[in-house]
Length: 101
Image (cartoon, rainbow, N blue to C red; front, side, top):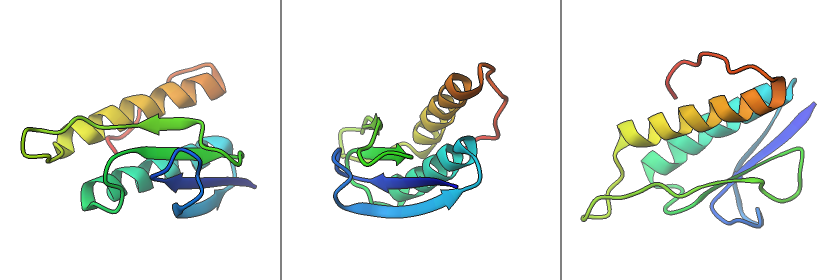
């Protein structure tokens, strides 16, 4: 079983959401999906941090904002989909085609 946490702080001291998954790839996928939701609903305001099988987050993402401080949902989903694909590639050696986050 692989543990994951999604947090706003880079130390992972205040997790927004945690979970477990059967594989590391599933853990990363679940954490990234949870992170996208948290960013877009405002639960995570600035910096998304994710840890899988680690005490400290090893992944960080700070999305760009418009002049009004708003996120572009299409951009956030695209960025996280690409970052997830890269992460899964690093785990498996191949880059899978993913559904958009």
